[in-house]
Length: 470
Image (cartoon, rainbow, N blue to C red):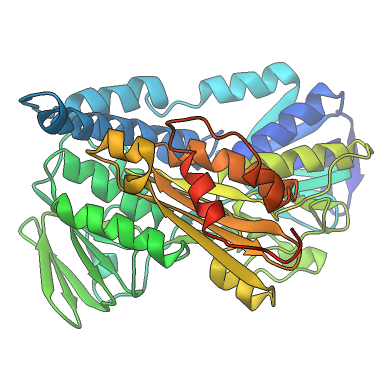
């Protein structure tokens, strides 16, 4: 890298600077470096981001263990008496050693450096188009001028609601939970979204007494109401207390006990997990130096992920879904654009996602409400998993539904939701159908293997009735 004078201080000339090395930023930096560009990757925390250390991977290890316990207990119904003794130490060791390597990001750094990326530890901020100032951990400041441009992948952090007294208590977020070596007797979960729901069920299956408090009328609010109802029923039958439509007014902590005061009941628990959404890392990023507002709910990008002059954005900060697969999808688009390739354009019509409760909740495209608000002529089809051939065979743990949302004028699906064992796999067929705009008439003419969970899709399609374009 050459050095040159730029502005009032010494700067280093590079091709690209990536601020934030979560999944999307990490992917983008590696691919651009492998293409021969000089790339600097800036990260203030762990290289790899939230997913491998405090999110997707360790949490799914916890969920896998909890689901194994639940399935073993179901054997009593299906095969004979079984006695299960939960042991959290096995989970804690697997998370520590296999998932996170003791929360060591060396493997991520090595992979990037082997590709040619220069990894700089510190806080990066924009200082005009293509210009990045990094405050390193040792107090030194470096300035980089990127001739091609800058990629932002600064992600999110747990949001903490402004509840009286909460900030003065030793509450947990998803980050602290990933480090658990011993479980509490009881846990209150503030927030019934995907993170709160997944961890609530996992810990409850290990014997923790769990109460979920959700301000909205139902848990898993963004999903279809029918899906939320299934999971709520499952939770309550598993002994999880679900309180919805409650306002938390005050939180206090004394003698190892949390006291959560609401507009209804008072909840006491040994520990409190705050899972009330995420906040964007946009402040302190210097967005104002490139004409952008740091107070926006998400950075607006075009179909090449461009957010401004020589500026791209990927991941949570784009508002397209706080999912690893979305961040990496966006990273691929940025790589093509930076390299001048006529690559793919961002298309979120068939965005799919999964919440890994048991049963899994998977969705793709529009909900029924979104489709109606978009002015479409909506037809909806339903089918119940327990009434399907595979659901009837499965019996214990067979809760779920399939819901499909069709645009009747065009005769295609625009959205679908699956609540089912392995629902995240079942949604794949529907994601393809929505992405490719496969006519419902074509889907109805398919062979659906018998007896499978995905065969329930056929019943949901039948429930649509006749569509005008078929």
